[in-house]
Length: 237
Image 1 (cartoon, rainbow, N blue to C red):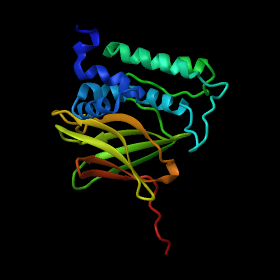
Image 2 (image 1 turned 180 degrees about the vertical axis):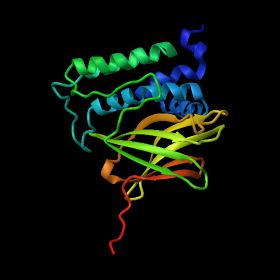
Image 3 (image 1 turned 60 degrees about the vertical axis):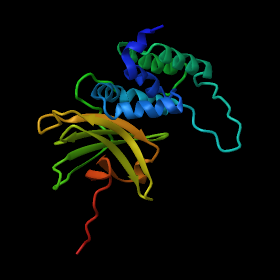
Image 4 (image 1 turned 90 degrees about the horizontal axis):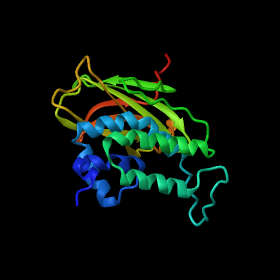
């Protein structure tokens, strides 16, 4: 029997991917699909602020060996389970935005913290607390990265220009201790992102803003542009 979301093929897993409810094998397959699918990449970028908000509202991990205790003013586990089940069951792309926004509204209504994070239809992105920019002279690729602190790490926005296609890229946060975490990934279409068109997307990292040394836009093992996360301190004469 063919269900409605089967017609969407791998596109139908986007909602479950955003809420982190895919099984490991499904997640691996969808990650490969996402790296080469402009359609899913664009939709994930539009929903990035909302998924970052959901991550911030998620209960903090309990210390090893400790027993998790639900906060009295937080959303009950049954609600999150029910919302996740609804998203998995209804994977039509047209319903993805409504389902995720409903999850945010339900969590906030049941005592979630008062956090506002804009979701825009156009190319605009929220203005971050800190912004860093760089252009690589060799590749010509430019990037502006915005960093906002969060209880779980950092919310990240990025605008990338002069990026030729087709190719698959990732944004990696490099910590001051050498730790590397993938923030987000996307596919560059054959029409590329030239001087008048920028890719704007977002994601998150478990690194706090003060623990980030730089961001790297990569294509495979090649670093297309590196963006220092802190101003370079010039030696005084």
